[in-house]
Image (tube, rainbow, N blue to C red; front, side):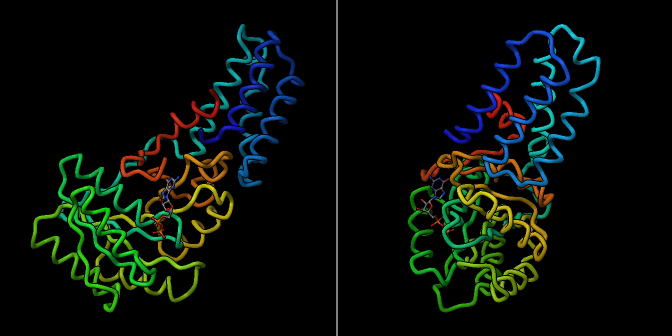
Length: 296
Ligand code: GDP
């Protein structure tokens, strides 16, 4: 389960608090100290934790809370609401252009799960009765094109390819024309990743952006890399103005720091989470449900 240790720790802190009945200011401060430690150990960004605890404290230490009949419940409720807010408040939906096709550019570093997420997203759109087209633009990673073709066949979504000898910009442009000609209402362009962020990667992505004017630029990041994924998101966002993040491998992430801090650090919402290698393992990200999952 994702967030295992964080969820366990927070549940312990709050059950202790509930066991106390009436609460003093010190009880709440003590509990929040433990929440702070738990969040830091979950690899949540330090500044984010600091601001979060300050906000919760401000709301939780008032007389109305302490003198109420169920102070612990109110404190948990405040934590729940602030955690939801931190992760973006409400669900952030996928864009839909009123001049189809809606163009979605998938960007990210190699191994983050970009190709897999592209296919998963296409499958989800197909299930919602859309007519997605996938475009294979990752010409640098050996076998990335083949991988997308195999997945496309599996999920019954067409894959546009021009091989690996044509520039990704040309591939994207041609794919867009192909989508228009064939009545595809969504175009998902899988772009090339690199091992690290470098200028040539960003230049290429900017050129593709210029050429096909995407409605969505979704960054795919690996939840298991914790704060590193948040830093990656920050760098991409500065250069490309992302519209959202897909956080992959949340099924294997026991800490949860990335899910909690990405929005707060970058201002960019998480739109989907990857919950496994299978094609159906993609879920819309619901901040409120995620907060409840963490708090138990
Ligand atoms: P790309 O280089 O970014 O295109 O990465 P791939 O899409 O090839 O994915 C890299 C590896 O991560 C593959 O083995 C995928 O099966 C795996 N993967 C992708 N998404 C998830 C996920 O949500 N959960 C898990 N457990 N594995 C994933």
